Length: 97
Image (cartoon, rainbow, N blue to C red; front, side):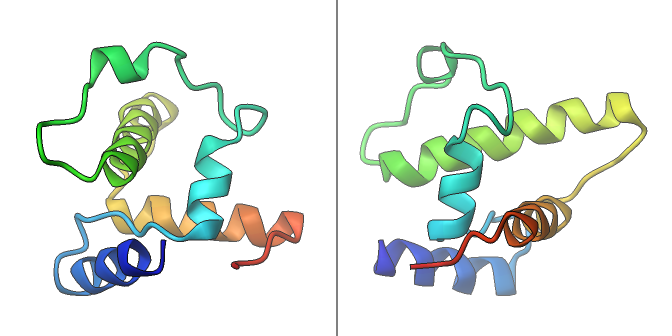
């Protein structure tokens, strides 16, 4: 988790298209009560051979959220989604581990 988190933050800093992956973002985006993910997303978007499967799944969740936001009148960037997830998690009292 630590290496994945560090790497995603480093990549995000240099190229904000990469979503941040840490314990807060992972917990929030995996919580089905918070966001109604399609149960079949793993079948629709299988991880490429050799990919970090956990980070791939995280990216797919971010992509699914980004696809729905324009219908709500938003044009999100990866950074917008990262900020949204962090603010929502903070409002719930979730802490990074």
